[in-house]
Length: 284
Length: 252
Ligand SMILES: Nc1ncnc2c1ncn2[C@@H]1O[C@H](COP(=O)(O)OP(=O)(O)OP(=O)(O)O)[C@@H](O)[C@H]1O
Ligand SMILES: [Mg+2]
Image (cartoon, each protein chain N blue to C red):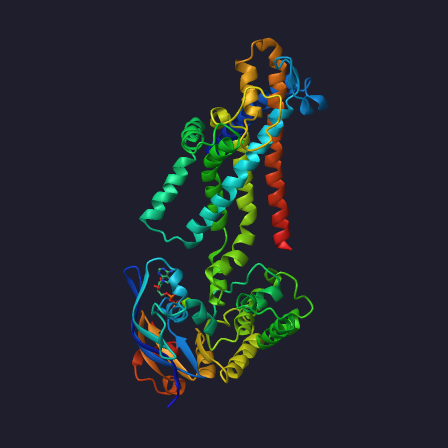
């Protein structure tokens, strides 16, 4: 009896320790970045271009570039991925062929991002002759995000009870009518949440945009999808490793990291709020 | 003789390798109530779901033999399943309201069938809810979620939902299993009323109910149709001993 209690207590403490260590690591990273970066972050840092060999000024073009390329990623990956998930989950039979497709999609989400980067160069930049630009980078990131969107959307669709579908079919609804009125409304929040998390991940990636369109330094914003752009993660990479005066660049790098983290966190927050809102709405 | 609505010949149903229905032969007559009785797991629901092809959604399900409705083969490639299900309504064994308002639940079938006329929809919703003996309990809260209703109310809501599209055949899988005596009586009354217009197939575990409401009774066991006859004959003078044992509760 007593021994059981001790084991139980011990087990709990081990688990608590796991949580504690993980939390602590995260906190240290955050603390380091915030304390070293916050001094540099100001309104002007956010809305000005880099100046003086990137030792002064702000990161405005990088913010805009990341925003644009993420939008393109979404435009490409969201409809395609959601459509794919609806087809796989609602229409496709469960056979060898669809199982292979599913397995491939799962595997694709584990492919390192640098591989997507190389693939993007070959396919979009060279074969399709799009050149290195916002579009090529957006498509490359889109490819990378696609498996995430599909997997998250399929999970969300699976959570809709079968009886919603059958009930609709038994009333003479077509399959599409059943999906539109009785499946999508109850899975869209899950689909969107997963999708936004995938996009947030894409926004922070460097490797896929490295060869497909991100620029070292540009004094102007891209005026069309066929121009190069600056992006936050790439800018950060440059400031940390490639700058001619790493010491001067260090605070700017920290501030850039802070902005990038803030951006990604707010996307994730948005996903959480969206899910909460839609859930509440559904209950009413 | 009565007019045959649905004709079943040599009908077999398989879940993968498991044969759930074996050589079923029976006729379902127009404007009559067919009661289906039998022990749990004998294939009553499977039989019902075959008639409106709801078994289509089950992976590995297979049929052979014939099942005709108005002379047309239900399982033929030419059969329009959506059309079939409009004609053959169904109340499921487990009540399955949609997470929508009471009104939208009942209006669902009308809307997917292209009815847009608001006045008609409102009229039909009210009529269906009245027929299902639910109207008085919900008339002042049609816009609340169907999930806020009690289990028995949800079951009646599902009946109302099926009635709204005026099917020719109505399949009811234990529609009274969660109802109190008053509501049960109302639903039974409704069935008597409905058979003037519709053909009804009802599964029930309640022998008195089967005797009261059905014109014909089919007794299933282990996937086989043991006996099928006019209800009166089945309940007063069954041909097989096992039928008698089952309906008198001396079974097993
Ligand atoms: N989706 C399914 N997949 C595989 N087997 C099934 C499925 N549904 C039913 N069965 C099997 O088919 C047989 C008949 O089931 P069915 O649901 O038709 O019985 P039932 O007579 O309606 O029983 P109950 O009175 O308990 O509702 C059972 O042996 C059951 O295990
Ligand atoms: Mg059943």
